[in-house]
Image (cartoon, rainbow over all chains, first blue to last red; front, top):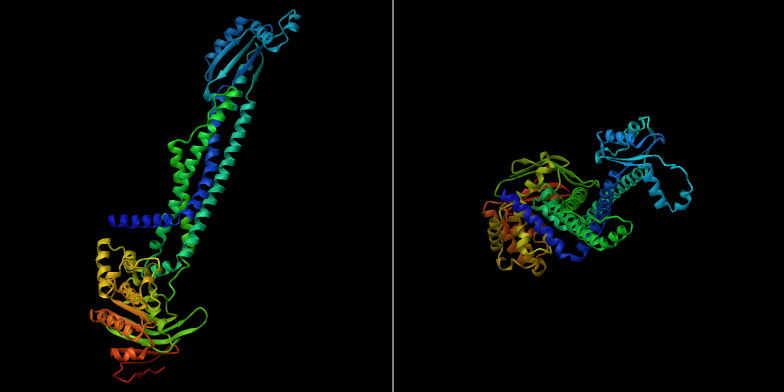
Length: 305
Length: 230
């Protein structure tokens, strides 16, 4: 075990030493990897932030029930009590016709015109808010059907289309982020693979001699795998730093913008778990790139004497 | 130790390097492969070191039929063969110490043992005081001695050398040959390809003479080379 550890430690130190001896080249490679990781990770973070906010909005979907004109307020109160006891209903608020007219008179700016009316044209109404777990379109449709089945009800209206549109946009964005992440991940694999191909070409003589004295393909490949893993790890670390910095720079303007729309939205900073995932993805892509490159190029190098 | 049984070698470019060559080399023996350029000396060494496989015939080294070894078995096989080259094949960016240590490192030898053996090997070739030097800082003769130290550091039972004195003056050549003689005395089988007849004569060892890829004869400087029927 100690021999195994020692061999891997040697390969790791050798790979780290190689990277340290070419700081500029290493920095550029890491920068490319970091940018490729930062872009999809940042978009994923942004989409996640928006989704967490809109989840609350989605929960705030109200179903408005308009009653027929001849239905009394007592009957409406009774129906409201029945509705409150239903599963999937979080809150029920009765809006008497008088209150509705008063609110309309106050908010619409048609106060004087409304004075001319002899009767209240508005019916009693009821706002029904579903629970957080009952806001799927099919749940809302079921609730609507149940409420509309009462003979006192004239009209049931669900204002959920905008939520569905928003969710569709977020789903689309999530898929775009996923697609770009896959493409940029392939880019990282290609960058690391190509960097290592050049490194292999540069060290061809050394590889030949190593094989000549009995070095196996695994022995020759090991430091390159560590190099790929280190590139990915360092790229992931730089990507995490860039994301953290971007969030810090954007947090205040985004909060100000959100506040101007009356929203409490804030830009989420990457959590430790997300940073861990980013590093793991970086290392994974580095290892894949290194493995593909070494498998292809090392096999072609055989000792020549 | 080594048996060539009607071995032929044709390279991918169609050139026939060896044609039906047969000979035996006993363990602990020192043998010279001689012949003009293109006679097939290097091909014989490449077949012994499993850098090539025979096109026909059988090459047995240390009891192993090289033709039957799988690709995964080749590295372990090569660790049993120390190789010395005319151009030394030293790693220019690595110290003398690191160059000599390489066969032990690839064999996963414990580091303490590596240090002991590298110093012993460099001491044998008289370069213990140059462990930290780079190859470029050494003379050609010293570089050749580093190559020999690297070949013997893992104590292989077989040492092959391809024109090891090709770039050396007569004095250095004798020094290098004396080193090979010492390894032979220690029980190592030594096979040296050379076109330097004088060195062969001085050594008094057996020689295998090749010409145009065929065995021309086997003998010693004292005994006239025996003609081998084709």
